[in-house]
Length: 273
Image 1: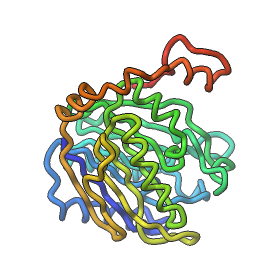
Image 2 (image 1 turned 180 degrees about the horizontal axis):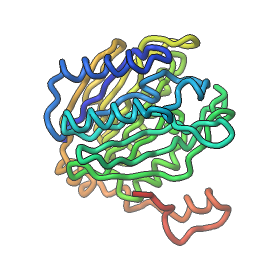
Image 3 (image 1 turned 90 degrees about the vertical axis):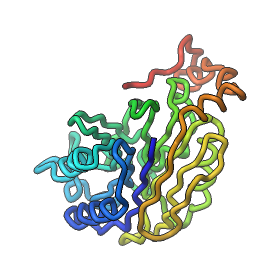
């Protein structure tokens, strides 16, 4: 499977400009058919607490744009989008679209409390998984990266590729890089970490979008500027690595249940498909 990660200098609250940027970057990159294309968190607006400004509920312009990308490039696309919920709050989501018009949504499970996100966005409740080009893939959003238990839930559900879309600031760049590698190593998964570059009204962003192998090695790093990176992922190599070093078989999943509910669980926590 070919992975394409788009590192975007997001224009603040300007959906049309960001749609045009993404399209231009992808057209110049000459994307192979059946790729997995990954865009940053809230790619069309920037990471904003102004829910009414950034929601996609009226004309669904961003959702339609992402679907159009899937159709035109014959690719699966993961993109950050905002939809509305009750009481004026939003849902910070990873929208997954497919060339046949189908779609899946993952809602960020850990809104960033320190930045006010938990006051403006509703937390999701379920890890999601889908299959593309033979890989089982789970999307996550930014601050989720600090909570390894939900990534373990995905791994127990069979996930082989983790995609983390983000607006992760320069001040904690080393955390971003370290945690991405940790999620790859501990879950024996490929990890695609897609961050924005540039700056918004509050923070500068380092970029450093990365595609990481299941042993923790960085396959490709986008550096600081706007652009597109890509890499092929080998399902055969992943299966062989997990077979040679079957660490995941030694997980004791009842501890996950105990941490989640206060008691031991007989089965791993569910992953929604």
